[in-house]
Length: 183
Image (spheres, rainbow, N blue to C red):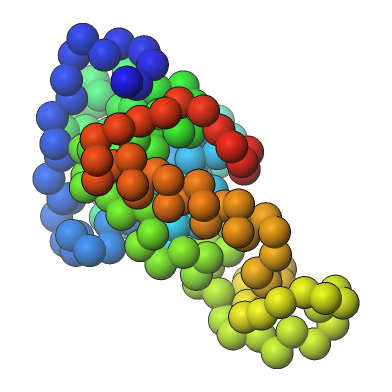
């Protein structure tokens, strides 16, 4: 069960115009920074709104870039053009938000794991691993924008386990609102 107002059932939302059902794109407001990183970890193209971005600017960006706007802010739903574009999540924690989003969009939490930079959202490129810490295991990847390097370490195994648990919960309709790994 998701925390928050569970008496109201939110409808399943269709795709924004120009979207592929296999590859939805997202824009998270600042309230959902942790969910943003988890969506990136799952392989989804997910932008994060800047500090103090107006509601109108958020909605305009979502429309222009063909993105779902994810928020916990009720006021965003009042804007013209919000219908079908804005998804208001009720859950407070990322696990609840993940379950809610998976239910409403049939989201696959193992879409393309660890294929995007968690910080800047760019698709990762294969890297030689030269200069990686001793004992680190490949495959090695690098962000072409910020040059951050990624490899399969313990943190990736824990994150993959969390994504797998969210995928399983979505497919079975079960949900636990705990966080085994904070991102």
